[in-house]
Length: 177
Image (tube, rainbow, N blue to C red; front, top):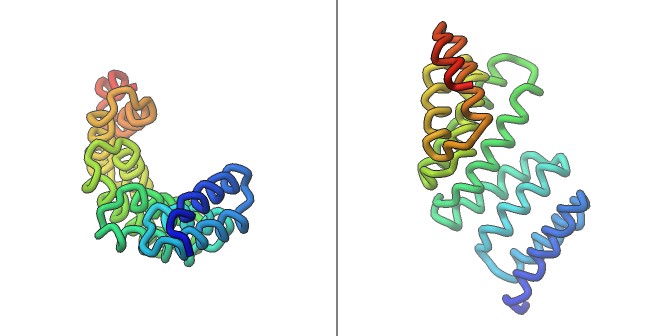
């Protein structure tokens, strides 16, 4: 196999993903990985395609492989893994299962933020996960980190206001919103 083809397969996978053609995207990402062992970006994108194709457990494996080959320092893969857990949490049957899934999301978002402190989306989604758990102080801290990372993040400002409202601080809520 020609390792230079790995990038071509990755780009083809990305094109199929844009067309929501998940099986073709999955196959191209797998081809990219066969051409270049340890191709973290291909593993990450494979995770996204598998997730969209409803193959959640395989997606978890792909995201974890992306972080493993990059020595855990792959914020985008941690972020995508967190998003998968966060999206899946409300679909689970019991409150205990939902809370455990939110915990997984929180752990993944923390790692994304650790490896990329300026990644506003990771901080914002961390706030979302904490808010879903009704952990208002932690949600507040995460939304504050999101607006520090990106002062123009409208969603973070809005949700910061919602948390202030829920904490009984209407003046700060109005200022944030």
